[in-house]
Image 1: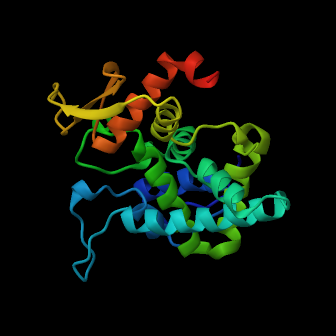
Image 2: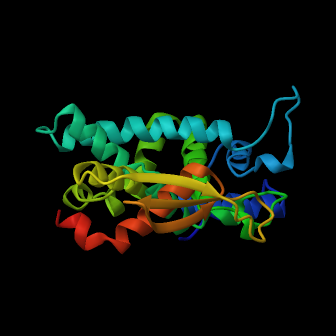
Length: 245
C-alpha cells in the first residue's frame, strides 16, 4: 500500500511507525492515535491517566466485544433469514469464539504493538484475541459505527465467515465431551493436580477421567482453559467413538 506524502510528518518517529502500522491494518487514517495506543497497553505497565484511572486495553476490549457481537448479529440476521434465535446465537458464538479471535489477532500480527513488562514468550494465546477486540473498540471511539462495521466486514466476515463450514465447528470441547459422556451414561470428572512446571506465571494442571480412566491431561493459566484443553485432547484421542456414537 502506498501512503500519501507527508502523512507522518506530524508524528515522532516512534509515533510515525505506530501510525503507519495502524494505517496498514485499518485501511484508513486514524484520527485519535492515542486511542489506538491504549488498545495495546498491557495492565502490567500499571499506567494511569491524568485522573488516576488505569490505562490498558481491557476497557477497549469490553467495548470491542460488544461491537463485534452487534455487527456479527446483524450480519447473521440478514444472511440467514430462516435461522431461529438459537441457531443465530450459536453461529455468532462460533464466529466470535476466543479461538477464532485469537486467529484473527495472530493473522494481523497485533502482538508486535503490545507494550508490556511481561515478555511476549510468557503471553497465552488469548492476548491475540484480546487486543483484536481492543482494536475494534478503538476504531469505534475514533471513527464511529460505520468504520467499525467496515473493518469487521473486511477483516472478519469476508475472509473468514463461511456459514456451512461454521455449522460444523465445535465451540466448546468440554461441552461436547460432557454431552457425549451423559449420552453414553459414562461417569466423568475433571481434577486439578499439582504440576507447576517451570513457568513464571501460575498454571493449573487438570486431568479428565472418563469411566474411572484418565484420558487426557493439560495445563493452562486458568482452570477453565486447562479443562477445555484437556477436553480437546480427550476428543481427539476418542474421536472415532465420539463422532460415531
